[in-house]
Amino acid sequence: MSSTSIPQPPFGLLLDVDGPIASPVTRHVDTPSIAEDISRMANAGIPVAFNTGRSLDFIADRVIPPLVAAGLGEHARVYSIGEKGAVWAPITPEGHRGSPQIDPEISLPTTFVAQMRELTATEYAGRIFFDETKYTMVSLEMVPGIPFDDYFAAQATIDHQALDRLRKLGLGVTLVGDSDYPDAHGEIQVRIEPTVISTDIELVHTGKALGARRALDAFATSGPLPAVWYTAGDSPSDYAMADWLHAHDYQVTHLDVRPRGPVPEKPYRVITHPGVFDDASAAILLHDLATGLGVH
Ligand SMILES: [Mg+2]
Image (cartoon, helix red, strand yellow):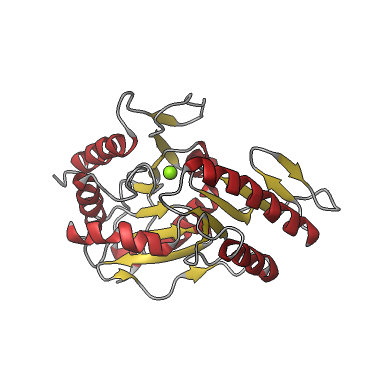
């Protein structure tokens, strides 16, 4: 199909996964209307990208099956952008098409990756595991079911071991919530980011803004780009998607589905649904958009 035969879509969607799409509690897509509305919009020509720090395997396991069950079509322009912009693949009714594309510029030193894998298998066995589905970043995950206090103690220790090893390799590191440790030139290359259930270790230029750029580059290969975008997320870092789109002269509206916290002042529209919880408020936005498009 030539891209000139595809009309410009009225808008596009960039969606964080954990929070707006998958329940932060069950980690599954629990609200049926979410998959139904996304599939209908995608089938109507709306470009949709899932922009997440998760692996592509997670999207394949948790997000694609409900989309396919809801009738996602062959010609939908839907992409997975994983590992904060470093890995990506188109979504089809058969799953991801082909092997994932991986940014060759984004990788951590192999000696460091091996050291962290070794630590999780020995000192931290039963408390922290190494996410083998990631290609470009290191994710040290809480073993499900262990007490949070045990995990947090182990996490604090392994995060500092990771910091020490990266610094010994001459890298500048930021340990989020702690401090910056620049290299000999005053530069920072790596971010260690502890979250409630994992620590992510990644290059500092990866993130939701890189994911947004990657999504638009991918969409540009399959047809015209919309001028209007909607983004959704449950973390402050998700605003980087909307920031990037705004900075590149797109009209953007961000849906902030954080359960709490102040809404920042932004030069674009931010919407919230007070009193409505994360995946439910995303469901409202997606339903409104699908309804506005006349696909209901
Ligand atoms: Mg999230």
